[in-house]
Figure 1: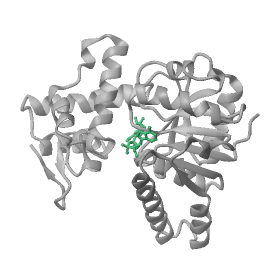
Figure 2: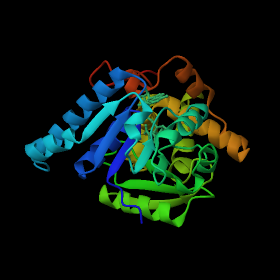
Figure 3: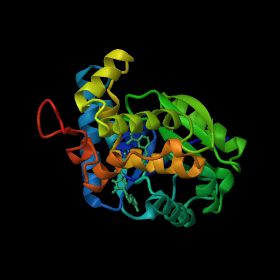
Figure 4: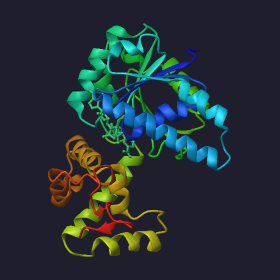
Length: 292
Ligand code: NAD
């Protein structure tokens, strides 16, 4: 079985920096790439801050933190990945972008390297078909925030080999994660169930069934969810939620997955949630203030 010692990550946003964080802490060598140099700087600062929090809680020594940070290299060119055993793509949730990244990374990879996507919803089989190694392509869907959340959903494309599956399952265990195996249907397991609930909350908000505060309190206290659905949508990113609803709507061909028009409007306004400073809550205020 391919043993994974060196991990490449494409995209240094919320998910990419989290994947780099857990891989570096597990003793793996990490190469982190983004198109934007500022995103790389921000990602390294975020990883350092999050590790500081672990040090403060006593779960990590200062020396181990420094060693882990020293294992992360960054860059903007695909050649960064030439010695990686696996590259995990965690760029923006747009199919055309991911297909183009998958095409352009292959020529620099070692022949045995695995290519994984952290996509929330795009078919792994379709991404695999854009590469020279469909048997080595797999979905590795981390949850946000990666250092905290225990699950990795592993999605096998139609061509994914058993060897690739086993190497990735072993990697997830090395990273301290529990796995759930999903088949390659739109949005897999977690988002197939979670994101339509968030979309329904936005639709209820649009119809005036309740305001932001009431809808979130209802689900937090009435269904025992740790976060209300609108707060969770802001946390995930409303652009990502909308992209997932579109994949479900198109992939299942069922009107029950229609994106809420209010969700579309928030995304068109650039109100993408916490990462943009505004979504269903305004994060310039403390505590964040509902926007409806
Ligand atoms: P994000 O917007 O925080 O980060 C995306 C990053 O990709 C940005 O830094 C952007 O500059 C970079 N990028 C864009 N084009 C690129 C390119 N051509 N080459 C390299 N980098 C590029 O988004 P995110 O929340 O980190 O989501 C990333 C992926 O992870 C998406 O596929 C998303 O569906 C998935 N995901 C997100 C969550 C979540 O809760 N946010 C959970 C699981 C999976």
